[in-house]
Image 1 (tube, rainbow, N blue to C red):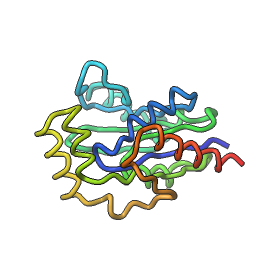
Image 2: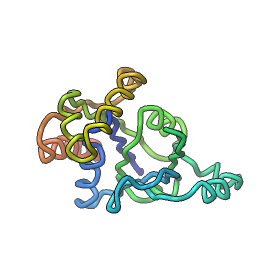
Image 3: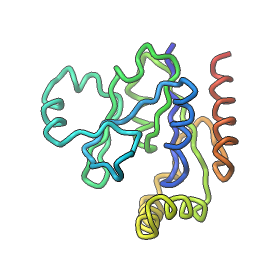
Image 4: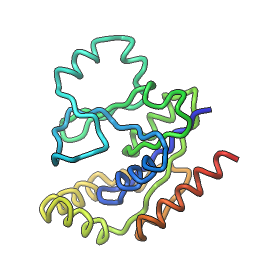
Length: 181
C-alpha cells in the first residue's frame, strides 16, 4: 500500500530541506502545484503554474475528483493530485496542517502519516533570515504566531528540528522504516 509522509511545521522549520534530502535517497517527493511565483530562480518544491492553468484544470470534474489537497495562502493556490503518489510506494510531502488533515480525509487508497518538525522561533528566524532576509523572516514568524494553527496539529509523530539536518533526516527515516515492518 502507498504511504504519504507529510512534514508539517512553521516557516523555517526545515521541511523542504528534509524532503529534498529524502528525495535524493529515492523517496517520491510530492511537489505541490502553485499559482505563486518563484521566490528565487532555483526554488524547488513546487510546480509553478499561472492562474489560467488552474482555472482550466479546475473547470474539469475529473480533475476535482483527483485532488488530494487544496489550500489558498496569501491569495495563491496550492494543490496536489492522486497521480503524484499513486503506485509510488512511500512519498514525502511538505504541507500545512489543514492540508495534512484534508489529505487524511481525501485519500482512501493509501496511509497518511503526519510528522511535525518542532523548531524554536529563534532557530526558525535565523534560518529564514539567512536564506530570505530579515523582513521576510519577521513577517513569517508574525504570521505563524497570529494564525496559531501549529498548536493544534493532529500529528502522528513529533521530531525535534533544532538539530542538524542529518540528525533530523535520520529520525524521519527511522519513522518511515518502522512503518514498513
